[in-house]
Length: 346
Image (cartoon, rainbow, N blue to C red; front, side, top):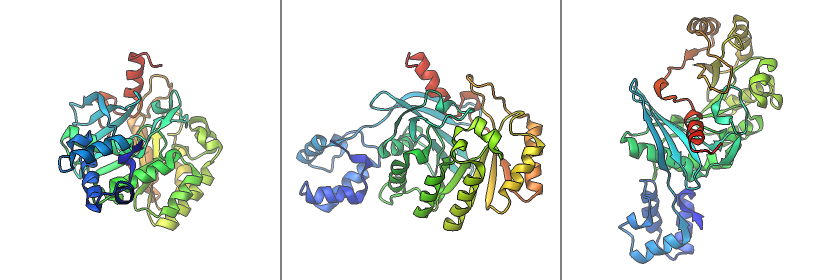
C-alpha cells in the first residue's frame, strides 16, 4: 500500500485519473483533506462511500499521536514528543515570536552524526522519516496548539541532508499552494556540513535559508566535537558555502554553540572572523544546552558577549540566540531519550 500523504498533488492526480478512473477534481479534494489533517478516509465526507473504501484498500494514511506535550510557563514554548505508527518517537518544538510562530521539526529518528554536544545522536540513527511524517509534525502541531504556523526550522532530531530526497519532497509538499502553502523564505534548513549535499542543494536554487552548524573555526577543535569534520574539514565546508551563495544569492547562517573552554576563547573568535571574511554570513551564537551524558558546559554570559563583540567589530553580523523553553528542556533529543529510558527502550 502506498503512503498517500507523501504524494504530490500532480502524482495523486495522475493516479486518480489513470489508475482509479476518477475525475481530476477528486484528487484535489483528497489532497485538501490530507493537508487539513484528516485521520481517515471516512472523514472525507464529500467523497462517495465506494471511493473512500477504494482509497482505504489502496493507500495508508498514518498519523502521529502525542506521547508527551510540555508547555513552558515562561514563554509559551510547546515541546511535542510524537509517537509514530511503528512506535518510534520524534520531537518538535513550537516557538512563539513577535513575527509569528515557528516550529522546529525532526527529519530522522535518531541521528548518525555523533556530535558531542547533542542528545539527538545518542544511540545513533534508527531510521529516516518519510515526507508525510515530516509534514505531520507541522500540521499536527498547528492543529493541537490552535496556533497558525508561519515558519519552519529543520533543526530537530536528525541531519536533514542525510535524508535528502525525503526532505526535498517535504519542502515541495509544505510549500504547495493547495496545502499548507508555507513559503520557502520562511523555512530554514540546518546541516552539520555534508559538502556533497550542500552542493546538490545549491543546484535546486531554493529560496530557503541554509544554516550550517560550524561550532569551531579549526579542524582540531571541530573534529573533536563533530566527527563529520574528519570527512569535510572546515576549509572544504566553507568553500562549499561560498559556492552555495554564488549559486543562490542567499546569505548563510552559521550556528555556533558556545562551549566553555572549548570554542569560546578570544583566539577562537579571531580565527572565526578570519575564516568567514568574504562570505555573506550571519553567526548565530547559541548558549549550549547541557546534556546529562556529556561533560561539555555552556560558556559564561560575559564570554558570549565578548565573542559576539569581536565578530561584530570586524563586520561579521552576530546575534545570541534567545533561549526558549528552558524550563521544559526544549533542546532537541532530550525528551525522546528520557521517554525511551522510562519505557525501557534503551
